[in-house]
Amino acid sequence: MEPIRILQVVTIMNRGGLETMLMNYYRQMDRTKIQFDFMVHRDERGDYDEEIERLGGKTYRMPHIRPGNYKNYFTLLEEFFDSHTEYKVVHSHINENSSFVLKAAHKAGIPCRIAHSHCSGLGVDYKFPFRLYARFTMKNHPTNYLACSTKAGEWLFGKNVKKPREVTVFNNAINVNDFVYDSNVRKKIRAEFNAEDKLVLGHVGRFNKSKNHDFLLNIFKAVHNKQPNSMLVLVGDGDLRSSIEKKATRLGLKSHVLFLGVREDINELMQGFDLFIFPSLFEGLPVVLVEAQAAGLNCIIADSITSEVDITGRIKFLSLRESSDAWAQTILSSAYEHVNTSEMIRKTGYDISSMANWLSGYYMVHALNVVQAQEEVLS
Image 1 (cartoon, one colour):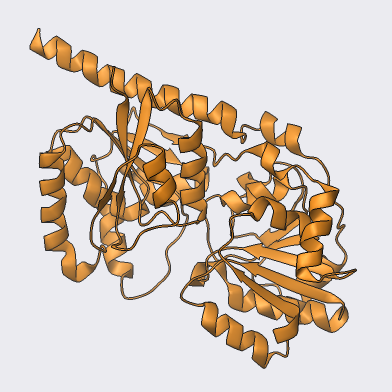
Image 2 (image 1 turned 120 degrees about the vertical axis):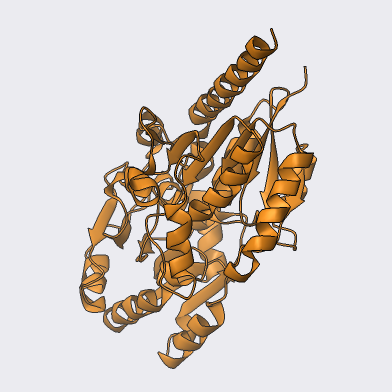
């Protein structure tokens, strides 16, 4: 029997939180039963494309979703689903733009159409009214609603969820064993940082507006003024990296901030941090905060992020209205020791092994329901 192929709809399979979460699940699937394919919206190859191909997945490329390109994009979507009738399940992760994909899938008669919310807000730019329009048109195109948190589900779906359907909170699970604290790994990473006995603050995230790197540098400046033997480690890349690097230089922090770019060894890097700092403007439920807690770190984060992320009691929430000095004071008065949180994370349902079984069953149930319904029609 051929595996059930699930079409995962994303922007690009780079090493972001959503994409890493998807790969965590993909690696755990019994691929004789469930196989993932990917519809992406970039021409360039993503960080995970090679692994996807190695695992047996296919990648289909679509253009950027831009207001001036809607008509062409809608046409391409219709053509895609007309020519790929093998898909009975489409799982879309592109937030409000999922409405466009699932509308085309609905029109093509694809019976299981999953909208998955990974965010809890929108940045205000020239696309803002178009994003509101996309969210408004979600309507009855999805058959199933998933969200990484209750807040993310309320933000994207609101009253669009048709009864008796409900939003299912689906955990951004990780491989807990990869993050268990190891003192030898810590020594290795601290040597790479040239940290010696320094206070090391860490952040992992794409350099975009929502991650709020600008304020993060202000926070670190306030920390460094009070504790000169400190450093900030920034992991990730993105459009705003250059401007943040320039600001670090202007603040006199150039030699105290490490820009590591995209890394594959996040689990090891976190062993070298003393605290994890995350002042985002908005998020869904960040995978990286689950990872940081799995590494046994205390985390200082913005209260704009859902309280559901605190699964170990090692999260401290602060308002973005507080000054950088107030953030610095909280950081400097925090405990820096790592603890083993693996059992807590497993008990709260964030370990990939148990959640992958749940997702596999979820896909199988809906796919089998589709097959049975079709057989009943034919009979």
